[in-house]
Length: 419
Image (tube, rainbow, N blue to C red):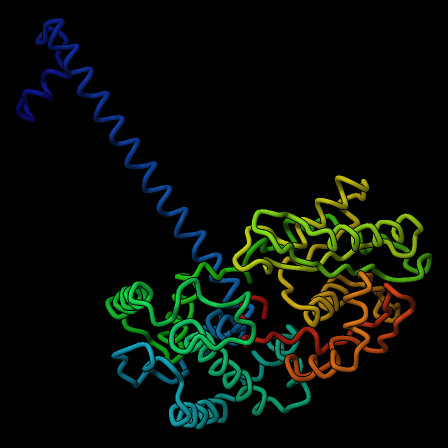
């Protein structure tokens, strides 16, 4: 049927007989269905893209806050060095010592020539964020330099650990999904690199290596740092709003902190140890020792588990003990005892808890003995670079009091699943 004839047929009631009208009606219905299906598929695709971008946005912001900050400030972004290296393979995306030294020099020149505008970024965005708190005593020029060195080290750690060597701090729970040297994995990496190479050329020195680091995390499903975000508007919304309504002088402690304990079996939601720790917290909560419970633990044990320790503990506290959601703060990212303390400090500081009032960590005896061992302090200093608490005191077989420290706000990309 020609275009003109179809047009006439649709506009002139008397031209078509009944069978022809029926055929045309079916034809138009099919066109409408195909159009609707196409629109739906486009919506799904766009939605998936938005989800991916949103997830990686949190990963970048947590691991490489300096990148998030400069990308929101076009005036500074255009001043940054341009990419100069050719990338022929994965190793080419690493920041070598020589390249780091070159960029170091260029970035300092950029600062010296644009001191006023970069100082505004450092004073109004970088310092208040706390993300680089271990460098807070440095003058702005050195802080600018340290932020970018921090970025070089973090990107190198991800590219090396997930693409080249497999050497990670905690390989038993953090490693790649595939043997690093396997043919299948190398094909996945090659495909990812080809996509990056064929995309628009990077404008700034940091973009190519960052895309590769994100690609490696994506291939391995390592988006743990972004899961449940934004917590303030989701799982922790009710509790965060409740903090300002509490009279903390009526309580012995600001919050009760429960570290998670991952199950040994796949498919198990919460271990017996995790349940026991929840029981301790519920007992003290109902005795009004503290108005909040901070449950802390991510997707850790066993390897690539489907269950988050903190989420399962929150669920257990609400379902079994009837503790209201507004009294539970969830930290679904901590992967170690060291970061249980660190992340608890972050919530105490960021949610407006009184820092002059101690928090109380409750746990089972085996973990309590581990925390009390002098080796635990050494581990904190070795892995975090500082102690994520002050005045830590063991009060009983299961209890430790401590105060938060501002160093805990520091973000560490050498632990990219929970920086």
